[in-house]
Amino acid sequence: MGEHRHVWRIVFRNFINSLKPRQIQGKNIGKDYIGNVYYEIPADPSKGKRKPSRWYDPPKGLDFQDPLPAEWEAWLRMRRMEPPTEEEIAKNLAIAEMKKVNAAKIEKQRLIDGGSLPEPVEKGHESFPTYSEFTPGDPTNKYRN
Image 1 (cartoon, helix red, strand yellow):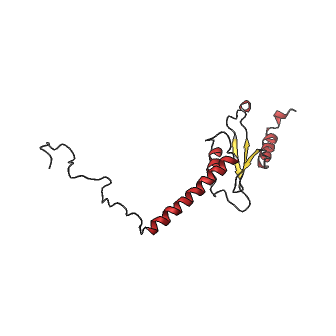
Image 2 (tube, one colour):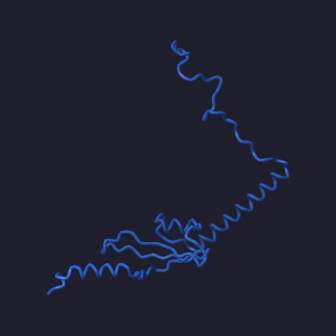
Image 3 (cartoon, one colour):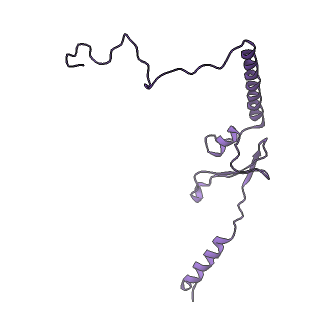
């Protein structure tokens, strides 16, 4: 009796094996300043896998809904091939901090000058402006009301 004769045994064994958790071994690529750890399984065209698999594990107590750094998110979504470097991340954090400081300075100066928040433009019910010197359509049209 060959293995091909016991089809239900094969189906049952495959079903049981599908319920067992797989031990996925990914290569540790890096860690961000939040504490997320990033992994990758490289592409293997010989096995029919054209794209690498990428994922991350958040630190204990944090959720997958928390925002990711932009550099790492671009890497996860395959918008960039190489993972971000520590220097790149530090540079982008410094730029973000500088923008916060500059925004605080501008806000402080605006309050010193007695300025208020800009008023929203009143448009009415139309979504585009109307001009008195512009008449829509053909002004020589004798059938126009």
